[in-house]
Length: 137
Image (tube, rainbow, N blue to C red; front, side, top):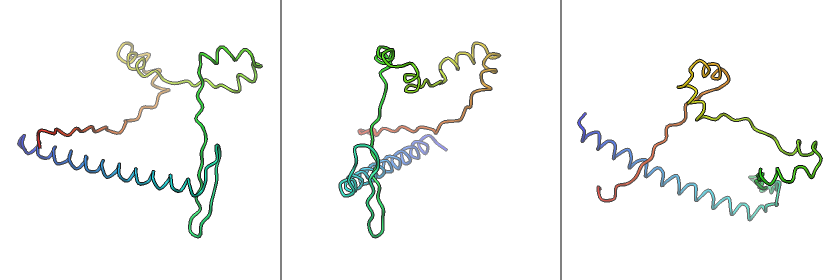
């Protein structure tokens, strides 16, 4: 295949992807508009669920709050409540430091192999980025 054929195929596929993303965005915007209208019809509680039944559909709205912890402030206030209460309120999550894992892999393969026994590795979905070149149409 010649370079011009490759470029032509590339441009065709990138254009198709651009159209698909536009269609996807329009569908998303339409869905969000319908969800907003349904929320107005059904009603929404501050926190929890609310259900309304029609002749053909039952629609439930659910809402709530995302709560995050300011760790610095938590360190300041946790001593003012009983330790048992504090320990039940805040959990510590163990997570992998990927940068350090990759460094260990290249610097000390033997230790990496030990650690790798406890690590599950799965491939990510391939990401495709495109940009329309306005002057080259």
